[in-house]
Amino acid sequence: MTTVLVVDDQFLIRAGLVGLLRAAPGIEVVGEAGDGAEAVALAAEIAPEVILMDIRMPGMNGIEATERILAQTAGPTPRILVLTTFDLDEYVYGALRAGASGFLLKDSGPERLLAAVTAVAGGDALFAPSVTRRLVEAYARRTAYERPADLDVLTSRELEVLKLIARGLSNPEIADLLYISEATVKTHLNRTMTKLDLGSRAQAVVVAYESGLVTPGGQRSR
Image (tube, rainbow, N blue to C red):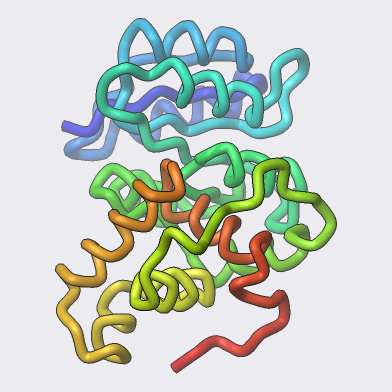
């Protein structure tokens, strides 16, 4: 069972999400929160595997809540899936920088929502990579990276894998392009994330753009 915490300040939206998830096999809703502060407290108490996080909330928004939850986690890190009304949302970009695993539009259908929860729970930390790439491209050059990533610590192959990930390629596509196995791709990515102290694949994409490794508007490599 995948345990899920649902966070949204609008009761009807939250109730709809909870109802949909509870009806799905393999998913257990273990908590609901109406704001960021409550989400931080509940996440510490119940340690859910996945958190559906509304991004625009009064008081503590989804970005700050994401930062606090990931900073306070002592055990397995929860996967945070950000919920938003707009696909090009600067708030979502901030959440991805903070370590959210991906994002989903609130008007997405039930099947897409359940697929997203399953994907991030299974370790696929970047749901809808083409949309995430477009979001990152829209904001990467507008925000100065507070702690520029030192990409010199990466090997040439790790840099190559990071660049392809940032351009939206999946692990199987990268393996095919570089003539290596998917397991090797995952190894390179895991080492990259460890060296750069990153918590999610989406965060790695943000760093690739903000460090200049990938240029906004560049063509998708294939």
